[in-house]
Image (cartoon, rainbow, N blue to C red; front, side, top):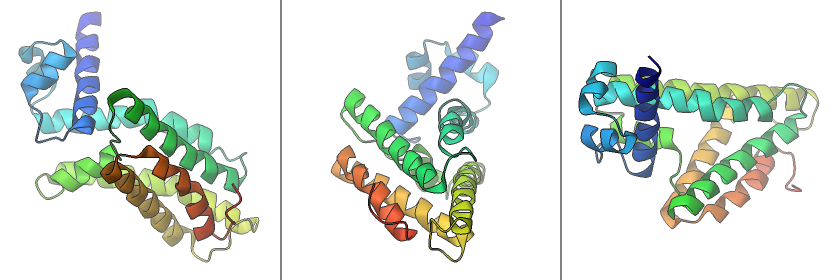
Length: 201
């Protein structure tokens, strides 16, 4: 039983790594199995299709890698301004870590998948949309608290959260295009300026 569970975890991990480093369309089931060290028959034991694998892989990536970061960055006991700074810092650190490991800035894995597959798979589009909703939920709560304690000068926390999320996605895309993670060092002051919190990071 332990081997079965391990095989599935390996497939999920291999899928997120390969899709993030390349693209959904560029990788094959064979490549995923090879990287995972799992036989192809095991793949179809767990997943009816590559789409099913990708959806579960991205959910697993969120639960294992992203949610803990959001829990630490957006704790309700943390000042709203500090929450935003931690979030921006996590984005830079993650992209820099990937760059140091493989020589390429990968950008946001969810945006990449949504852009590539949004018109081809409604299930994948909806998964990416759902994940983006989680991001804006945390941002909106921080912005709402910041508006309440007057550390942010904003009128509509919900609308501003979407703008802030779009700014971060654009910054990651810019870093990916230029293959320069240092571009993301400017994200924190840009976000603080947007929410009227000043640029003194």
